[in-house]
Image (tube, rainbow, N blue to C red; front, side, top):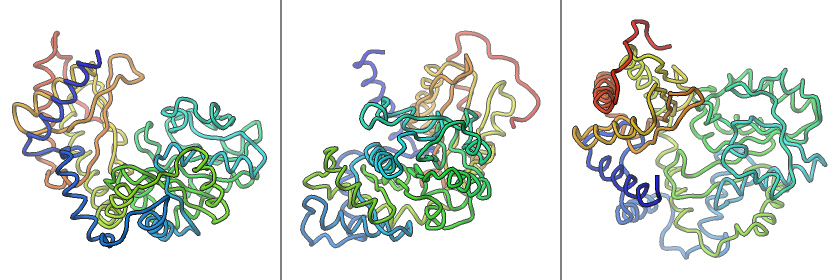
Length: 394
């Protein structure tokens, strides 16, 4: 697809979803004007807007760092313009402190999948993989690594495996195993905010397992951009020095900082309800897909408020079916989410995010919506649909 066609499709998706009466996954995308108006209202409840804008990290940015450290129970936190930068700096700092440039992490983790090999290209680090299973590594796999490593990085939840998490007992055992290997533990907690319901522990206790943790302000909290690296004061001080070297000390960042503070005030308390409703949504989707061969809702009981749906059709066909459902019925199950080819030939996968817009959907609404979506899928098929199965999806 050319850049022109891609831009046209993006515009069509946005118009279709924003024209809907009901959107299950992710919700509508506001215009720039709407986002500015929303930020002014939400930020006014989170910070004194009569104060001056920040300059090189003071003011509202410093306040965001203070509140983030307080929520996570760490000594300090540093604001970064991107999570990619925050995490690279964290792993670089730990390599210098441990004297070991090897990082143990999952092959589906963000640095391996989405950062253009930045760990090796920019910092000279190398990675090893305790497991290739679609889950976090367990204690025995960490103990069994056949070479030393300085840092164990755990992505919580592991997004590209389906937003999956270990149990609390498994997580603590894995952390203990890394410490037995004299390694430090860093959490990629871009989506750590929604993990407490699964673990049955508060954020500070979860973050307290690790030596450092990175969190995102836009993935779950609805911010504009930005991230924080939290941990011991001396590590965060060093990270601020590297942030400057990496070009991350911006003159003013108040829009992103205000949006992050508003997200901590508004979205963080709501995440537990999103996680609870995601279980109902996933169950209703599975019911609606029960007769569809090769379909999967994964995990069948979501660990957070996000999960995957797998269907045995080309991604382009599923994208078109989603668009036509939104345009013709004013109801969208998958929102603006794209479908992508999965590892299994002929199967595609998408992500579902259950947030504010999904709370108005009952289980019956979800089942009806996915059943209607499949009608649009079959309408787009250039060949007869495969026979339905009788056993329910697992």
